[in-house]
Image (cartoon, rainbow, N blue to C red):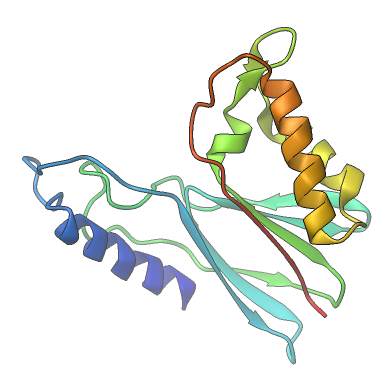
Length: 163
């Protein structure tokens, strides 16, 4: 399942980058999530390595948290395991995989992190629109919030729906 694939990817990344020993040549890694959808059964299996799955449920956005460890970094064990989580799903439901680059971005008048609550508000404000329009609105709001602050991390967001 998705958790086993994350574990294999972690080992592969660590070995490819020479980070499987404490004296590794670099200390790089990433966040990742995998969703496996079983449409005939109305369920999805999710596993996340320091990445959450946000999903629409009864007009609100809920978070299914991934495991805390990311992938690849020297301090992550080569035999790190991840957790499969099962979610019952419905046609038309919307899903968002989001990296911490959005959540941890500093900005606004008080120079605070955007955070999960503000991110959820950005998503729910436009989630009834096509994904291309959502992208434009979310990025515009993100850049307005960031203002003159430097971007802290990479930004990754994947949105999808079940037909």
